[in-house]
Image (cartoon, rainbow, N blue to C red; front, side):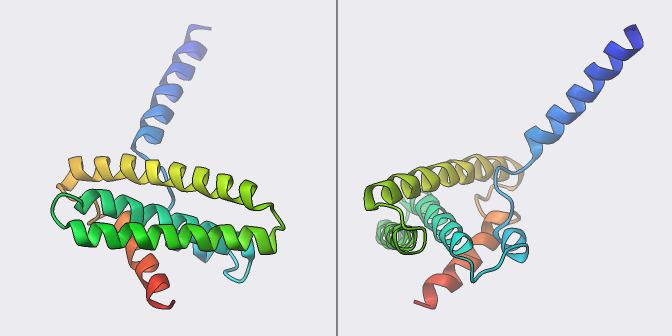
Length: 147
């Protein structure tokens, strides 16, 4: 009985350490590799995710480059609007419902970027470089260039 309790305790500790070091979001590339980009749900997620990363980037550079920060917020809001538009058209959601869902999704994704950005900062003194966040930003910048 003591061995069983000991094993359960060890397994719990190991899994909690593994979860604590894991990223909050999977990389956007990994996500998109598994999804059909033509699917409205995938497109909505992509728009929300990119909106969140632009909002995150805006906050990071606010003190050093206010103009770029403002531009990033405008891009973030534009992506959020497109997400809402797709929900209304493709998922036939009411406008208010789509707005609420998109805002909640962006907030959750934004908070995940904050968490992972802090972890990355502790690791290498960069919010972006050396993490999936940098790769996500590259994907999202391609999306916004294609507008």
